[in-house]
Image (tube, rainbow, N blue to C red; front, side):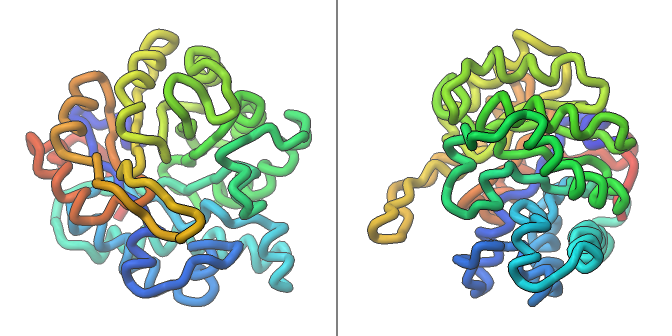
Length: 308
């Protein structure tokens, strides 16, 4: 069973990298937060635990930017890479077990970032890599196999920038035996690669392996429109976890502007049909605590299976 089987809406975690940076870690490395699977696994547990303590019911693992290619450049072979991916799930399970809240059920979503994330050059916000759907499927499938072996509650196919990669991912998760969600990174009413959202969401509408669809790593202002487009093409549960809404100044390497991520907006997203709401970049445990406070949306102790 998955978070989407709960009878009440659930709160997901926020930006894992944001929390790790707040704890003093430099994540400018090409492996981003995945580096800490090797260097500081205890810090990943602490970050997950902070979100669980804030009221999240779902943790997304530190595997978003983990790839066989990336770890190979660090001198690690396939067996070592597989062990680190398994560790990402184990660490989230550990945090779920350690966080207070007897009777509260928690879930682990194994993060599967797009091909562009492994390039570490911002390509996940553009898509259109010049690869065929078959090539993308063949690239994704090995780590999906490994993560499925680790038995998370769900595979989080996230920050997907275009329809071609979504089709490859839907194909790649077929037959793995672990359900998946599919979330796009969007700009307005289109994917980052420019395709209409109705076309994008329709990719997974008939897939028995993809149990929920939605958006992540986008502006809060874009969420309501995305929910409407998703509901128009599927009756699958919907999940949204946008960024804070602050702006990144690449030249000065700093964030600016106010956060637009508020409990009031989250309340509206739930009302508009979202089953799970959380946050992505720049969304902290304090922000997640604000979500968890609204209408006791995380009170599902008697309706969902536990993750730890």
